[in-house]
Length: 297
Image (cartoon, rainbow, N blue to C red):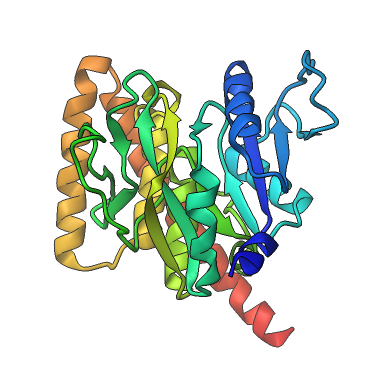
């Protein structure tokens, strides 16, 4: 019923992590297209002058200069009490009707997240990602990237992961999995959230009429030491440990190192992979040590 839908209030949480210059385009899109009963929370990693005097309409949280994406997300979640939240990183923009297309899905208690279709900012008629996939060899896959939005019929695909431009989540489901994992690199935060929702028995669904725009230039880098370390930690976290998967992963790492040669990033990439593997082993050791204490406690 319409009455039931109106109960599902929405909060838009905008994490600003080194993207303050793009905040206003995001805010303009949200304020222009949001439903009436929607609050907006901006989590800032640096001061914002608020030249348009939005403080009455928008909640600004000062989080400090070294705030990570996952920390900013969790601060925003703590500040919101709406049953549905759209985590929309600064630099991404929502389109007309985005919320109205997404919110009805949450009447189905199995739905934990609705994934928007992300269009390219520079070429608004082209799809950047109709959600993401994760190949267990360790790779994020852009679904339907580069396809003309006008010339394709998108369906309500399930079990899809969000693009870096975010997604709409059921708040209670995020609370049940304790929010974003603050130990993860920026490139993996949204994929990890969705994979944990799926593991907990929730369903994620792509909504073709819920559209956002994003600039590929704002995506977390896949190059360099830190990116390679974070990717390796994530691979081992979600690996099924089968020999074929590990062999495919090694092939992926080799291709990545070769692709990094022209950018002079081959050695940082390999060193990052080794560091990530070592970090994952250390995490497992620490976890194993903590288990007896938890059991005794």
